[in-house]
Length: 234
Length: 112
Image (cartoon, rainbow over all chains, first blue to last red):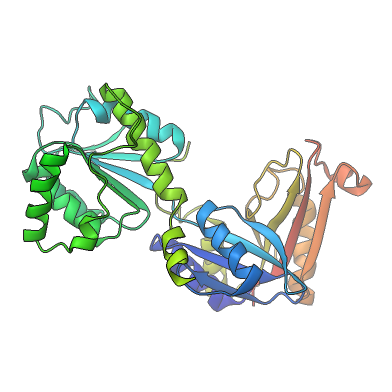
């Protein structure tokens, strides 16, 4: 392995950016491919698959054997609102492999008794996200119903290109939210990325069922990352 | 379950390999590139080895690490990468103990 490649790879991993290390098993030469880099042909398709699934594997392409080591940041889910839905969502998401952080400045809601074994911040999203910024391997679900708490986090999630952004509320509520986000400087194309009403349409009727719908939508967003972009290029 | 979303700098094999390199050590990196059956560590797992035989990480959960370290010291000396295969079908491999029934292929290369 080239020492410079190792240094670069570790920089990417520390910064929570995805990279695939491509090693030619014939001559030992290696290179780093970042998400969005264009690689042609069968090798390119295999690399795209490695980014999407996170699975590392050997592939035959161009008459050679390559090993693709996928280094994906661990995805996580940030929930704005220490509410009923979040109580169900936190353990489910953790089991599915998405560690959860919950942010809610309302100290009556954000208590360890209501959220055992969860990373819980009884603070404003503005303060928490300054310390631990959102990124493209983070999903954000805003479920407080309170613009004072949700709006800043939603705008931050759009700016950080979170792979999933969902907001609780009816279509009417969301229409008002869209106006506020536009006023905060969000672009219309950014706002179109918000899933609202939140969650896959499974007819959820209880907080726990809404949590299932939100988790399913998060997983779908994660596993289809980059598919839209690829379609646009072709 | 490891809940952290950040790298565990003290235990991450690739971070350790970079640190060793900065300290002027000769280093080899072993990587699981294929598995069949009930292999204990997934494809992509690393074991990093220095010329004195110190190592971090895992390619088999302890079954074949000893043999990989020996080969890695040779690779550090020669600079030529090697592909190692361990499994129950292989008598030597059975001796070094991948007794879980799986088979793995490990690529060993020198850093630099």
